[in-house]
Length: 233
Image (cartoon, rainbow, N blue to C red; front, side, top):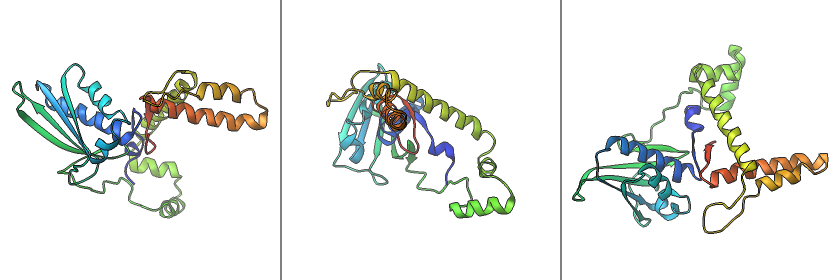
C-alpha cells in the first residue's frame, strides 16, 4: 500500500480526479511559468467528456486568476498513458508556445508525468491484511504501531489535520442552505434532514442523523467545498 498521505488528500470537490488533480497540476505549471503571457489547457478523453459537470474549467480558472487562459475540450482524443490526460501550454505575447507539459490525473487526486511511469512506491512491505495482522501478532506490536513504523511519527499530525478537515466539512454542510451548483437546480437537504432527525423518536434519530451527515459532506463536495479524498471525493 502507498502512504496514507496519498490515500487521504485534502482539496476541493466535486471530484478528486476531475477537479482536485487538475487544480494541483495547474498550480505546479503556474509556478514553473509565472512569466507567461497566456496559458492554454487541453483536456483529453474522460476529462473532456465529463469535466464541465465536475467543474474542471472552474478549478483551472481559479488558479490562473486574472490571467489569459484558454481551455480546450478534446473528448475524442487521448494521450497515451491514461484517459484523464491534460496538456498545459505556456504562451508568449505572440501566442507561441514557450513550454508544454503533459500530465495525467490517475485517481484520488494523484498526478502522473510521462517520465515517471506507473511505479509501485509503497511504504508498506506487506501487501495483504492477513500478513500485516500476522506480523503484529509475531512482533507484539499493535496495528497503529505498525503504521507508525512504516509512515514515521509525523503521520499522526497529518491524520489529525485530515480528521479536522472532515469534521469541518460536516459542520459546514449541516448549516448551509441554498442551491447546489450546476444546471439541475438541486436544493441542499442536509440542514433540513438534520433538523427533522432530532425530532424523531430515539430509534429513528440515529439513522436520520447519519443520513444528514452523508448529505452534508456530499453537498459540500458538490459545492467545491474543502473535503478529504478517502480515496475519492
